[in-house]
Length: 255
Image (tube, rainbow, N blue to C red; front, side):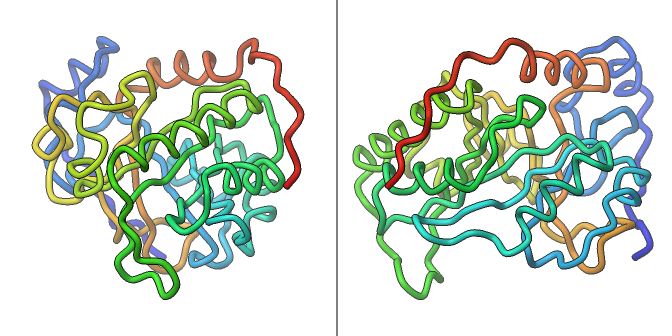
């Protein structure tokens, strides 16, 4: 699939990028970005066969790969994508899609059972969003209960993998549940209609999912595209912190 992602070069932003600063505050909305950003994707089985080496050559430096959902769903292509991304030199992490009809304890056990503990991997991700179209669970538990359950998952995942997990959120879920909460965790924010600063109040972020309809060499069809909140030098520093001296991990508790 031809890559139709055309960077928009903005002189002021390039100067900021060269200086090593956080330049995402001035990003244009949606698919218009200046040169100097670290680009990534997030994928699941729905992307089908992925040519990871071509993806890497197209400039992708990181990928979040769907691993699990709820307490019993494993993405059909997780193992394949997990191995192939690393072999191609793409930094990768696994994400879990939260299901409101299973306990967080069940879900984190399932995640740990299926996602290898690799010191080179990005931190695990907890994907939190309302799912009104779920065929089996459309619950919206109270805010306090959701936050308590999130902490169960996040703390157990951190104990096992030795890395502080990342929280992914959509705009509506963040407004309903996460506003002002869990500030000790890094965030990955979805905002396809503008910069996160216009959609999320007072929320620092590490990753931004800026489109769900991106195109990329090595992937047929649409793919979610993301940026890291910084330039290549900042990315290198952040990545080194994730892979250096992880805390000892406890063995998983099997369900």
